[in-house]
Image 1 (tube, rainbow, N blue to C red):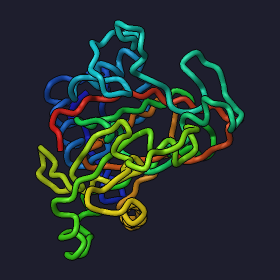
Image 2: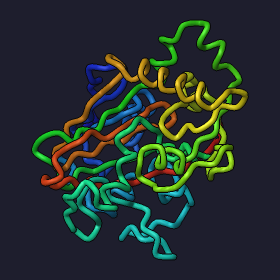
Image 3: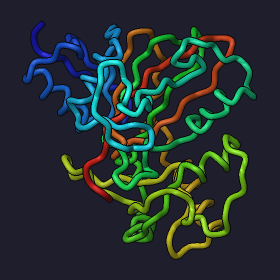
Image 4: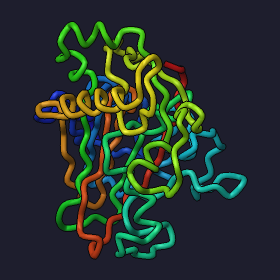
Length: 293
């Protein structure tokens, strides 16, 4: 097939791969793909049509696969873990059994509304996640984009007083917090948000490969140590609003057969709304983190 071609997208992040078959990568091709992933944060490949086992095998090139709760599990070609837990979930309104959910109040739909806010996968776990990989199985004709925001370029654009304020700050991330505040879970939040299941992380981290610093923010961020929660939430939302602006954002319009992989260590993402009468099914594979931050 020849050398994989890498074309940067019209943003501070993202590159489109061509002349590539992700299910049949030799070592030289994998090195090009891996370098593009680390350099651009998001890689896009069209016309791949990966089966689940092929997508899992591609994900395993990045590291150890994990479930949504970030626990590591041996890979099986059918996507099942030994205890029956499914760690390659589907994103959208068509479940893994093929049922099409069209009611916005359907628990299946409600459980996924948190995906519509800017977040980093598994930031609520101590090791976070290295990579997430979505494959377009069924896609709506209109809308339903996935957007990606560059937290490296966002950090670079901050004024000196903000980077000085961020230095040394640590925060508690919880998926329970984000799901409650967004209406996906019906429960009360405790006064001490750090009692929720979650994990503590620095608000700035350096990429272990490139060394570039990036912001660690998003909807899972529940508490900043040393700050009043109301003040912290306002500040984090301001940081998100400022960070997630062009040219630091890439919006991906899905086509069947697409594969998009992104680096959770430097990229936030969110899904966009669409008409639930249209079918949307994106197969998700996640790669476990290696280093606490």
